Image (cartoon, rainbow, N blue to C red; front, top):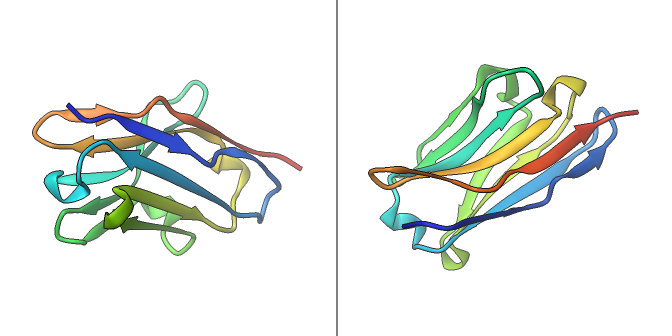
Length: 114
C-alpha cells in the first residue's frame, strides 16, 4: 500500500507558475514510477508527467518545455514545477504511483484565471 499526499495547487494567472508536491509513504525507489495526471471538467484523466525509478522522465506534449518533474529521495517526494501556465492547464492534478498496482492521491485543484 502507498499513500500519496499532494499539495501546492491554487489560483494563478496565465503565464504564472506553481509547484505541486506529492509525498509518498514509501521510498520512491521502491516504486516503478511516480508522476502526475490531470482531469479537467468534462474530460478524461490524462498523463502530465512521469518520473521512473531509473530517473527517466516522460511528459505530455502539451507541457513539454513548460513543466518539470523532479524528485527528492530523502523526502520521498516528487515535484511538478509548472511554468508559463495556460488556461487549458486548469484541472485537478492527481499524484500517481506505480508499484505493481497503481495508487492515486486525492487531487489538488489548479485554477488558471485572469
